[in-house]
Length: 267
Image (cartoon, rainbow, N blue to C red; front, side, top):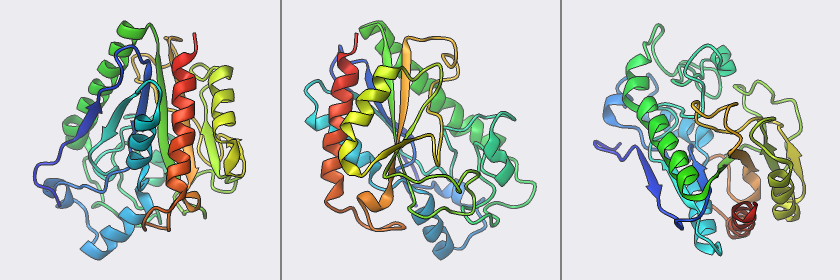
């Protein structure tokens, strides 16, 4: 475990690019202070990290950024989602609270106990969640100021077979799931994603995971902020549950670069 981990990184892109590749779930890093509040032994924690981490998605985003004609920005979470999940609502709006997986998880992917009963997650929200949200908001507002708009492309992955924590695991599991928002996902952005990822065996919408990330200050209010979630089924590019990446990573990075370039060119 890391004693002083970097909680997040904003990797600069071209000054005129509106695109931010957002990678929230790629890290396995759990600070020692947070590890102390997790009841799993070390072996069980490693197995949980195998299941819950969107492994290699930061590598996909980095390779995509390097391959773009106009370099997008990258916002990368440096901590495991077992610390806090920056993509959850921090209040009762979050449906994953039903399975103990709100902004601070109290249950595992297999619905087992992760933290003690009655655990107070508010200090973790104050320490990690709010600074992350504030930094992401600033990144978006910088793109709005520089480019007149912002396009958030959320980079995720998901297991080939559903895990017990999934609320909608009985739906379709296409090679590429595109998560959308009725306000923030314009048709042209969705069409660009469907075109870019057409070669992986099919895309689907909002199943098994729906929605996309937008800072709460802009959510449902500012149509200059566009967003789309790209959920990659893990068998497309890696050995599951937490194994190495395979050759699919290179092809996925090229497709993501195509999407990022198309999103950056939209007027």
